Image: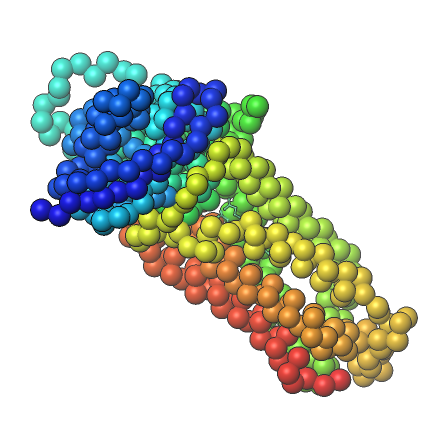
Length: 249
Length: 231
Ligand code: HEM
Ligand code: SF4
Ligand code: FES
């Protein structure tokens, strides 16, 4: 089993106000079949043993579904692979002697809390502005009482796969949250339960997205390349269609 | 800072304005190119006649010019405020940023719209000053059309573009225009919500081809004049 020697350059920042900086670390004897986060765990064990503060990073499920683990790896959100979260990235995608630069998401709306951990609650506030259905839907309806064409159901489900990781914002040269916001608008608006509030929802969520200080989309598409769920920028066009529709009403 | 004072004046709305003004400018650029292709007729009569025809519209031309200026202003003001917001949105830059590639519109054109746009703006100032407000009949640029005397704009254009510095400047800006529109045309459709999953890829290709064609079309003119035309 190949063993890797790595040079890490990791962003260290004590608190939101502190001036951070990159710190160099060396690791050797790293199995290439461990995950990226396990590699960071090993680093932290060493740091703790030598009495130093471990590198703070977020993670929870470690199976690509919770969206908490994102960091920038050598300039790419969630690292070099497409359709992959940081926790699903394995060390076999790195080479012996590689230098790996690890940075937190960088966006005014995602302030750094500590080291690699950022505050993504701006996303929660976008959801709270309208990313819900306000009617009581009651017990689940009879199957087939609402007929939804398969392509529409697929589109809604594709949007619903968003895990709120923030990679779209992190990878966007404009730090725009359009992919996230559009996905959260469309996974509801396309379905009958979410349809009545569709216009109100798009206004409110877009307005909230702006107030949180995210950038303005210029259709570059880096969000799509970084999104672990491969959500398409078609959904951003859908959000704009909804917006134009809402303007007409 | 509170941006969306008016309920609907959001980033999405601003993108609609950028797209509509951008498409308006594309319309202008197409017409401008078709008219200017008369420059390729080397006696200059066709071009001078075309220019004189435009002049003869008088107040109508003035209205068109003001309309065009308004479209430019909308485009420039909205993109500048967009750029400002986007710079503010990432106060700490990445030490390293790399594209993740994939099938996306991310390329040098799309990532540098403000650079290409700003140079086009600089060019516009010089271009309008050189020709629109440049020397006319009273400075001796006179051509004859039948019995009439008209402005010899052809000679002014040829004299200007025979200058190697101007030739290079015009050529570079026409390439930048092509790059701006390579992303811009599709991007405008995307901003207006007119792309759908099945149409977006073909539209992206078509927009890029049209954009590059417009750039190349405009590039032919300075090259033709610099290397060929004589007065
Ligand atoms: C006067 C100088 C110009 C400047 C400073 C400028 C700047 C920009 C910038 C920064 C963008 C990207 C903004 C965004 O996507 O949100 C843009 C988009 C665009 N520009 Fe320009 N531009 C200029 C002239 C032109 C001209 C002459 C044309 C047409 C021939 C044009 C057509 C477009 C189009 C179609 C878009 C895409 C709109 C969209 O993405 O929604 N621009 N411009
Ligand atoms: S759209 Fe994709 S990249 Fe953005 S938050 Fe959702 S899952 Fe993450
Ligand atoms: S830890 Fe849950 S997605 Fe990575």
